[in-house]
Image 1 (cartoon, helix red, strand yellow):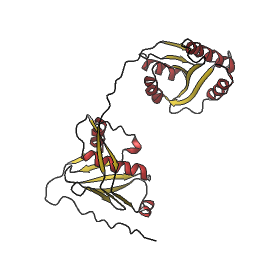
Image 2: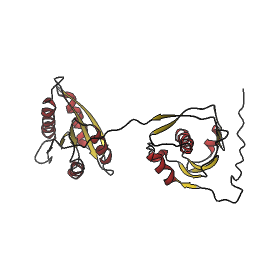
Image 3: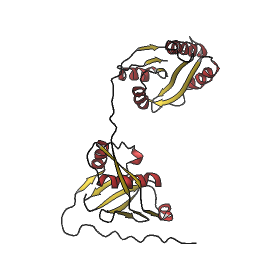
Length: 272
């Protein structure tokens, strides 16, 4: 059995000539990456700072307790140092060797700031417990993205009050409206539409979605996928799915806000 010894990496101070290094903050780093087409969520924004963009650089990367996001941050660090024209996107599609001291990362707690060193001459990145040799970069042209403005086709609000309308009647009315619209574009003799329950951040389980899902399964000539999304996610997704009919379920305040923000949509929305 070969025992891999823990890397003994002594990260000596990189700058000894008295010159103040170029230091980029987390905001600077991820603003630049975003401009070059790398749109990363908060859990992947682990590079806290980069000092001196040149032959050598030193960075602080947060250990989040997840090796996948940590390695992704290290790859993005290397990519950042080689960024070129915004028309091209860089990717790391291989490396010569990756050595990880797993016990080391099991011992440090999430949130620990790890000092990372990268040498452009040797193409080696290392830190306590990890050494990445020879990351291989490739570049490709960005695909042009075309966006077209969205426009409302129609909106119908179906109010629901427990003391006036039974839940099953309410759902039947909602489904009938959206199914009629979908069948107007009849292709497979099935009304195909998307059902979305829209919630705000504080919302708990919305009981109507469960009843709706059961009802949809029992109806002939109806094909629908039930999704649960927050308000912001619903906005983004509805803009992407042009030409689709949607049945949206949620509180009146949330759906009104959604309607106002999507008033240029070309989709058909039935809001209940």
